[in-house]
Length: 264
Image (cartoon, rainbow, N blue to C red; front, side):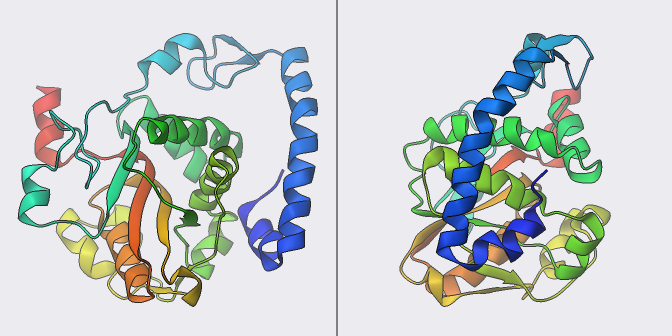
């Protein structure tokens, strides 16, 4: 199984190594499809037969896909125009795209992927994000950057979940993937903090590389909650000269008041 830290150290170090990795991946896909057809799977969520897919049809249909959304923050909105919050204070993104809301059963998949090392889920997660991107003509990034982890966090987890999704999206959309950001300050996990404390927690946590200069990029991550981490990364990219920054995520967490209203 290919892990993100392997690719960062090896295939991202030179263009010919990256090309070799893409060729090997392309050669392995027919074999993988043959094995999937030969060994029918059970749905990752409900254990029902799912053929050669990780999810059965019913669970796939139940995923909380986002329809109309604010183009700047990616939150569900009644029409595809900037929401009131973004009109009052625009985020540092030219566009934000999310495939799902962070709700059942999407949250189960993302937690298993990120915290349970279920790396096989990277394929369907990336596929859902790509489907959402194809419905968004305003998503026009010319290069992809995975949101980096700190070295300590990556050693602890063993992989970078954003990188695993991003490299599959890059292949599917035929976009270059570049290493334009580095995390230079470790900080407590955002999930452990109150929403109001998250922006301060990631302030000055990222630096951008000169390779971003003049490029419209997309920063890819698994989940956007408050948007503080992606905003800090976007600001670092813009300081490094990126012409515009988009945020591409698999899922978008609803603000607490919206979650409460939907649960009533």
